Image (tube, rainbow, N blue to C red; front, side, top):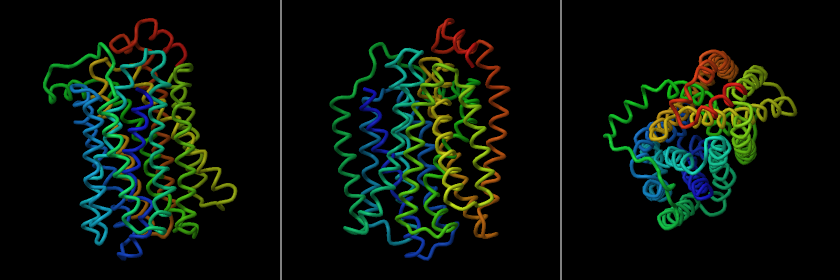
Amino acid sequence: MLALCTVGFAVNFWAWALLSPLGPRFKDSLDLSSFEQSLLVAVPVVVGSLGRVPVGALTDRFGGRVMFPVVSAATIVPVLYLGLAGHSSLPALLAGGFFLGIGGTAFAVGVPVVNTWFPPERRGLAIGVFGAGMGGTAISALTTVKLVDANGMSSPFLITAAVLATYAVAAALLLRDAPGRTVPTEPLARRLAAAVRLPITWQAAALYAVAFGGYVAFSVYLPTYLKTGYGLTQADAANRMAGFVLLAVAMRPFGGWLSDRMGPTRVLSGSLAVVVTAAVTQSFTPALAPLGTIAFLAMAASLGAASGAAFALVALLTPAGQVGSVTGVVGAAGGLGGFLPPLVMGSLYGEYGTYAAGLALLAVVATAALAYTLTAVRAAVEGGEPERGTGSRGDHRTASTTA
């Protein structure tokens, strides 16, 4: 079940990220401004993020066996539209990108499914492994431009649509929800309201907005940054972005695994400290080899590990029947955290001709998140919140002493 969910997450994220590698091409062919290009790659992010809130709550109610095929099948429609007709103008691309955001909601389906299949002491690693499905963005980065160059604009979209259809059928036939899964009976609005009232919802949302938001922002904007700031070719920039994504993906399960052993607050603190250092370094726009590359790879590793640790925190402190609802809100925060930075980076570059201010802002935000982790989040973990969640008192004692 973990493998099926991870594959589904990767496939839907592959579709979700199809426009990002083509951003520079559309900028040239449609004569877009820096802000319009940033808006183009950011629209699927914000729609996929906000959509996680209802999709997570619906997964609590109907389970992943229903929701994974539904989300995957629904994503096929905008993928085909963009590949066949929706790439000739900015309004058409924005309309297609809006509905392409459906693919981004798959995250809120997989987390509650995986959470119910594993005991509390293994959920950090399990959800981290599932989170590696965000590597679907690397598939897009590595293949989209090459397929367009070789076979025309429609080819990557047609291939992705076929893979989505195959997965939707496989999930409908093979995916199962865990025996004894808690099925809420309250209305959707009431369950969302209850999730919003939980302190863990806002604690994890704030941290995930920085960790996963930073990852999403770089995964969609890094090709533009490298092409504009360092003069790389589109293909070279896309390949380097894929390397960033793959490292972040590899570190996400590690962050979850480490959280199971050391506690999520310690992993989050160390990761965010690295983000601050790397962002400050890159704000001076050093030479790409070696210092710039080291800074970006350090950010990739730490953002991936922090993303895994944030959801280890969710698994530790969230009541069993509310994991989907909380995941939806936290996932939405993470996606929204990735929506704003590309717009800010594009606007600042258009105004000042440099990305330094944008990276300095990232360092400031990561510093604030680090301070929050060391104060409010640590106090919540040590103060007994797990007793209200999925863990036992024994789980709580282990988490609090190691965190």
